[in-house]
Image (tube, rainbow, N blue to C red):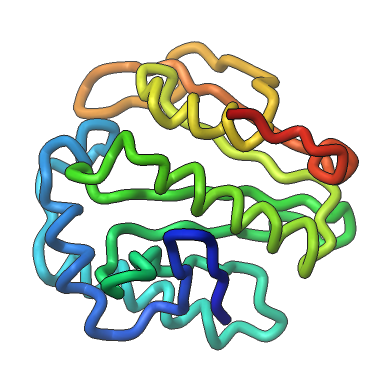
Length: 183
């Protein structure tokens, strides 16, 4: 499976992708909103293996794709969609971009592509996402792709001994079709 945007190619993970993933996951900026304080080779190999295992699911309900630069092929993150309830046609999305490339619109571009796949190919009715409220850049990505903030859950995430609020966003198929994307 492969998705393309103007600048990105979202493709299936391959075993060797762990090296590029470790390069950005080991950055302290990346780990700010995660419980972990470091990422080892074994951690990231297991992380990539999880995505490889998902590719073999039948029926497949999790699609976590490597985000690569179209021009160079360099892996710069990942973006995915997970079907939560096939009958209700509901799924959630998530994304990660290498910290040195933050602020360039790659997360929004990848998220738009995965939403298009979710509403088009997967025929979802509702797609949601969440982020730590202090992660304002992630919240802005969700707003830019047309998602509406539905909730703020107080002190929902405990990260390294500190409580954080979580924000939930969602978009419906009719909003996506209606051009609900912003920015």
